[in-house]
Amino acid sequence: MSGFRKFLDIAIPRFITEEVALHDRGDGYEIVCAVKDIEPGEYFDARVTISSLQILGFGLFPRVIGDVRPW
Image 1: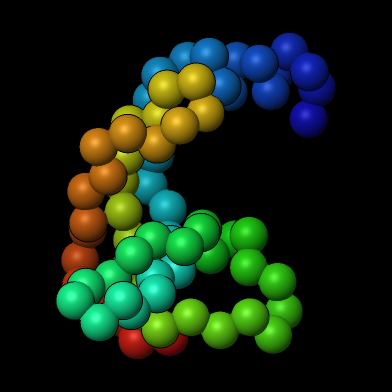
Image 2: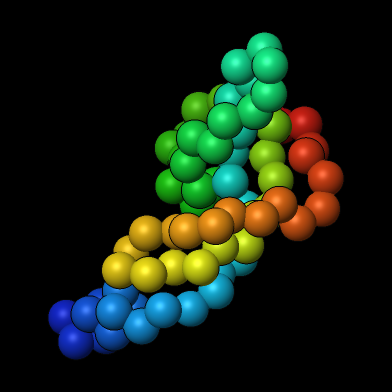
């Protein structure tokens, strides 16, 4: 990906949808990372699809889409 394209990807606010891995804390789940970033052999408790507003590379206001699914 070119540097300019990467800059635009970070600079332009937009809504994104991605699948994330979750860790069970006992009283609820905590987002660990995006499923696309998981290394082979890593294991998590569950996964879910979220939608969030991405501004300057940060995902703000995450909203769960669908149900939490076991890993």
